[in-house]
Length: 210
Image (cartoon, rainbow, N blue to C red; front, side, top):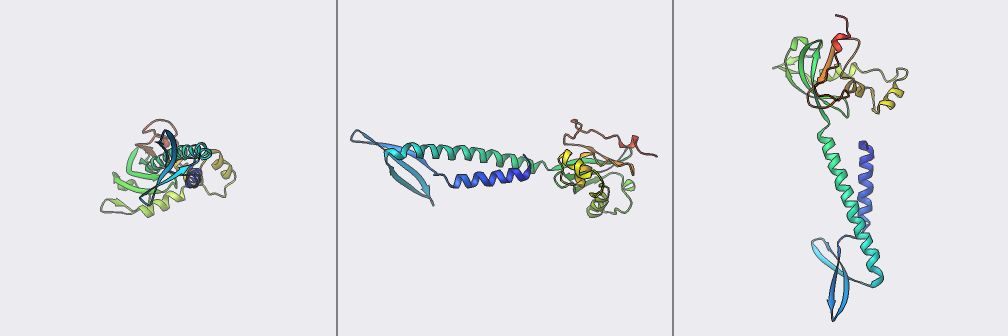
């Protein structure tokens, strides 16, 4: 389930839950006869309503349905929270065999959201300034975005649909930043990538002319 479908389902469940009665059923025995009540809290005040025999079973079913939907909603929200926490993909930016810098990519948008340690500033792409040992993130993102395949290129839309990604920037994430036009790539450091292995290198330096 993608983010859009997950949000749609959360909204749908929330609306369904709001339309169902909250609270619980209770019973009291008075003079040997059992009486059933619907009890719930409203604005911090406990409410109670006597139930006729014909109301008991339908109300019990609705309350049970509400509990089931609430459990589904909690599960979806938990999954969404874990997914949000996992959107940062940490990797090592490489020039041939040289580790250059630590990056954190947003694997929803494909943009660089954080630049960590810069190991070899002289190996950074031309035009990315470094001040106080910190690389310029805006310039890095401009360079990173320019590496993506133009959306107008023939066959790109079909490729995006088959890979399940929204735009060409995400192709950079999927292919570890590999390009045939230069000698840069990246290595995952804390996420399992398409290779299914941690720290899997695309081996881009083997493909590029020196």
